[in-house]
Length: 283
Ligand SMILES: O=P(O)(O)OC(CO)CO
Ligand SMILES: [Mg+2]
Image (cartoon, protein in one colour):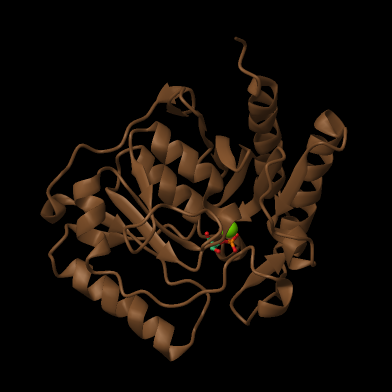
C-alpha cells in the first residue's frame, strides 16, 4: 500500500527549508526581543512570522478542515494545545530563540505530524548549519539524505550527555537541575553538553554524537519531530522516571539504548511541571 502520509512528509521538508531561509536572512530588527512566560522566555517577530508562514502553507496545501495545528506561538496566544486522534501538525518555528537572538549558531525549525496520537514523521532543519534531519515511522532517519544511527556506546563512562537549564529560574528548580548535572558529570561521563535547542539536541543523539539528551520543562513542539528521528535512528524515548514517554508531559529522556537511559534516569531529580495539555487556568 502507498504510504498514506508521503505527500505531507515531503511537503514538511520543503516548508522547513523555506522557514529556515527566512530565519537565516532575518535582519537585525527581526531579532528584537519580547518576553512570554517570564523574563528569559523570549520571542521575536521572526518566531511569529515563521509560524504564520509554516501554518499558512500547510493549511493552503492540506486545509480541508481535517488537519489540526499545535504551534508554539499560537499556543502562546491562547490556542489549545490538545492532541486528538485527528491528523495534527506540531510546530516549533524557531527552536532555540535565545540562540537566534544572540547569534549563537544553533537554531532549528521543527515540524512533526501525528495521527491517532501517534507520531508519523518528524523534520528538524538546523538552518544555520544547513542540516535537514528527517524521519518517517518505520523508514529510518536521515541527515541531508544520508542515513543516521545512534551511537553503540553502552558504557556510561564513555558517553556525552546533553541537558539544558530551561527558562524557570526558581532556586528550587535550578538547584535540582544542577544537582542532577553534577551527579551525571561525576559518574563520570566524558562530558555534558547543550546546544540550546531541544530539537537539535535530539538530532545529535540520533546521529551518534551524544548518547542521551534529557530535560524536564521542554514542550511538545520542541521534541515531537526529534522523537521520531531518535526512534528511527535506533534510539529510545522514556519518561524521566523510566516509564513510557508521554509527548505532552514536558518530561523526556532520549537515548541511544536502555543501558545508558537507565543509568541517567537513576540520577535525575524530578521536579513538577504543568503538562502542555493542562486546562489553561492551571498554566
Ligand atoms: O527556543 P524555544 O522554542 O523556546 O525552545 C527552547 C526550549 O523550550 C529550546 O529548545
Ligand atoms: Mg522550542
